[in-house]
Length: 431
Image (cartoon, rainbow, N blue to C red; front, side):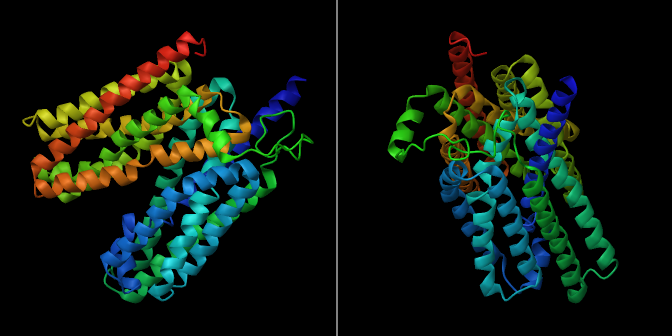
């Protein structure tokens, strides 16, 4: 009996690993501009404004896609949705690798918006939640974000090495740049298709297990028609759900400061571009450390306790960077890396609070979709508010100070909300 249980556990962890692998390979091809913006604009004969327009479309698709992805996740199995998502992402990537006329890029980015959010996001989180046992929710969600970051970092190293190997000393050769960029796109695209096949083959669940594959029809249970309004009424009655959503919003806001650290170091403290680049790379490696470490700590001392600690130290570090201007620059390097670590720990932890919400399984997908739309609306609000701040202060040192103070204030709100959730759960004996 013990051998059967061990084999079942190993297969469950293998399926979780496949989902983490899928989440790690699906996004890099969409966001190649992070490392290859100049090459993309050169090869496709486009301006940065043209590229920004494509990412605006992708951002809009993401925001409107979260709720729809939840509806799909409740209707279809994680196996079908995730394998389809990876296959489509790879297929659009192969089209992208042909370097089509730039007028066709809008269709590729719309396609990626569908495959990476509509059919993917809620199915991924629902699949992970149902595969993880109750006592390992924080750990598994931590491994999801940290493992995804590790995969992206490792693939990024491979991609940069390929790019450098093909170009060698011919950095300004357009033909070689095109070949190097194509090679990277092909690598990511074929990986997506390969992982799609693996997930389609292996992501099947026994009816006795946490089930990410079966639905009401497959369990021979009567199908109950429910309206979206009835489902929202159920969610409105779950106070823990809305507290958890607010925690995601506040935690993600703290994480967003990671995009401003390079500018903070150069503008406020005179770091050169090379040193700022090294610190940026060091921050990337904080993602697996923060995500996995935060998740394991969350299962050991409690998820809400760990999130509260992370929020508290995130606020303290942001205040130190904002209010103290005369530390040696090496101290600011340490503060920046530690704050990035906190941001990644929060990203690895906040989704584990979903397990406290006792959401009926038939609406779990749309609950994740609504939570994602509201929590990740930070992607709209923070750039807008940040843009106003930086415009007002002419991109000068004061802009970073005001931005970090704003983030610290949001972190304080997040800390209060997390403490409220903790005591609410403690009162209901859910901890």
